[in-house]
Each structure stands twice: as structure tokens, then as C-alpha cells.
Amino acid sequence: MATQLKFEVKCSEAEWQARQDLAACYRIFAHLGWCESIYNHITLRVPGEDNAFLINPYGLLWEEVTASNLVKIDGDGNKVGDNPYPVNLAGFTQHSVFHKSLPYAHAIVHTHTPDTMAVCSTEGGLEASNFYSCFFEGAIGYHDFEGITVRSEEGERLVKNIGNHFILMLRNHGPVVMGRTIQEMFLMYYMLQRACEVQVKTASLGKPIVVPPEVIDTHQRDRDKQLTTDFGKLDFEAWKRKIDTIDRSWRD
Image (cartoon, rainbow, N blue to C red; front, side, top):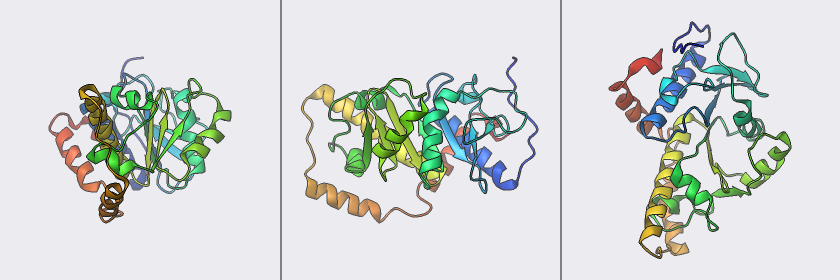
């Protein structure tokens, strides 16, 4: 099938905005190198539809994703509409569980970046040893590796292990980050990626300095003052302007 990047899509204004935001997110991740060929996923709930989601077309690189070629699917991964691209159902298995079970999971990303996978593959997981990782101390769930996440029966354990957190580190695998908005998810992933990058670099230099609990408490207290309903919006809009200077086709 020849690559086609633009389609005619009949949808509400709210869905079209969601499509543009998700397409932008894919392009930003691709620009920053946080993608894995045609694999991994970012999914977003369609506004006003409890059981409809947008996902990348299976077979396209993230830098090829556009607003119109995103695939609309239901909660079981079945396509809605006549988009010709297939969906990697295996990859959506874990996303569907979180979307269905967690009311705040409107936007979800799962990646295989080397640094996040490295941290997921260490016994201690993410350590409170740098500015970014201290934000996440006590706010991450961990799930033991069970192989490729294609079996629906694993879903109950995934939900149990994430608890009420927004991040689940799949041991020996990679992170899952979710947010109430795509902007919130993006900024949380950005900080997690940085935390893992710094941890990996620190480990190559020697024993890390672990931040004391009382300092972490202060750090998180001050963090919480910055958490608003617009968390991540300024960052996301700034990166959208950046990718517009490279290629504006994501808007189509």
C-alpha cells in the first residue's frame, strides 16, 4: 500500500482539534527521538465519546502521522470508519485497559527509548537522585515483565500495579505515562525521560547522591503549587511551534 498521509475526515470540531493535538504529539516525539520505528503508541480519547480513541496508523513512522490519517478505534481496538490503515492491536491491549479502568487516562503513551528502558530494567527502578526524578518519588507503579503485552488477562494486574498513579514502569520493558490531557501527559513524559537520561549518565560516573526524604517532600510541595488544569500547555504549544518550522503537514 502506497503511503498516503492525508484523508478526508468528517468529524466534530472537538475531534478535529484532538486529531491535530495527537498528530502534533507524534511529530514532537519523533523530533526528539522518542520513537521506535513504526511501533509504540500514543492514544487519545475522542472528546465527548467514552468508547472512542485515536491511535497511529500501523506501518507509518511517527514523523508521517497527520491529523487525518490517525485511526479512530473503539475500546476493543476495532476500527471506526473507513481509514485503510491497520491498527497494531497487540500494542493497544495495555492502552485499552487503562482507558477503560482509569477515568483520568485520557492520553497515554508507551515508548521504548533506551534510557527509560534501562531504568525499567534495573532492580531499583527510578532513583530519587536528580531534579527530575525527585518529582516522581512515590508516584510511580511497577509491573513485572510477563512478555509482550498482548493478553487481556494481564490487564487486571496492570491496573492493580499502577494504583492511582499516572506512570507505570513495565520492568524489563518500558514506561507507560498517562494524563488527563495530552498536554499534561506530554510534560510528564518529558520530565520522566529527562530523569531517566540523567540517572543513566550518573550511573556511568559512580555512586549517585540520593536526595533525603525531607528534601523530596519540599521539592514535591513546591511542584504541587505549579500543577494546574493547564499543566503542560505552554510546553506543548512551544513544541508545536518548533515542529511547524520543520514540517506543517501534521496539521492536515
